[in-house]
Length: 440
Image 1: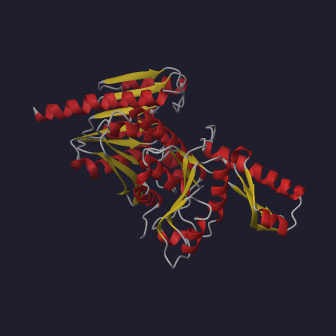
Image 2 (image 1 turned 90 degrees about the horizontal axis):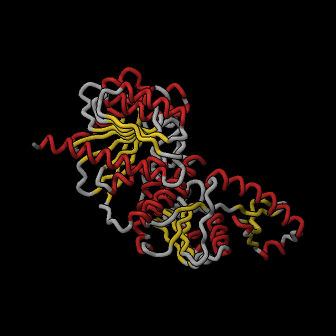
Image 3 (image 1 turned 180 degrees about the horizontal axis):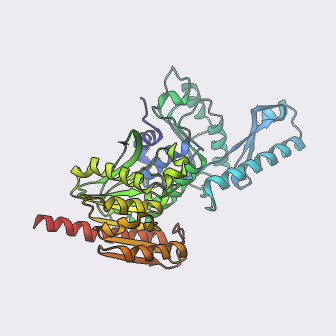
């Protein structure tokens, strides 16, 4: 079995773990590569997602050989046999633990930010990696999770070395591995795309997992429609642009997301809004408008014409499959969405901008025909002034909604939910209205 990428591997692994739904489960990804896999598992199980950061304690004169491991919350485990055989002193143990504790705390801050660690006491813990070769980190992770009083520990991975997978059963209650090939030489050989994952991507996925689980808890009684998701690639002027398409059953309309500078299809805020739109029956496409190489060039990041052109090309590829199309833009993506909507023959039914920079669309604002909603936080004062000026130039039906107490990223409690509700209602009103008028 060859996996397309970590997201594909995660979805396949989630199918094997489906029996865990409705149980008291928490999914822990091993950074970095295990987190994208764990994210898909957590989504499928409607389970909370967190990261499990462990640091192995190496012997003073042979650091590659672990004599123990440490985790968050002051947890530490030792291999007493190794410590005794190597005659490690208490002072050496303490020095090693202190040194690794500094690294562990720094790593946790980079990945999780200010969110607290999820409690493991009494829960079924699913530890996920993108693949396991030696299993040293997974074994340490099991020991740390056990020290945090997990009731049951499951180690899950798409692919692993046969001997290692077997040995993990001695430290975990269950091991789930989709493939254990005999000719195992490394995890990467079983992926078509094994691109290195950055700390920023891990942090983004963890934030998305937190918002996904919150949204799932809020909507679990509303029986949302089943959603089919897949990764797609759209080629524009020779650039291969990655996207995530989510299609609920019987979806008639599509909302394309234009992300802001420094963001991507992994944006936790846009994923939150997209999930809310999926629950309302809209298909969504979260797409990178720049390649990873282009994202480093500020000239590309603020090239609104380029971003709008790529948004148009994505629209053209998918338009025939849906009755109507809407745009959701954030930051510079708001300008790209309005620029694209202003193009002759754009036929865009509605536009929503969250904390956007519509001013960057310039004179094209006057050409936008699609009903446009601008959403800005009351504490995002500079952007609020820019949106007020931009709205004065719009000739289409428009509204400006100021979310009280919200800053630029809408990180305050309830702020992002307000954005999702506003976007859902705006698209529901204008896309459905357009469809009815076409049928009459």
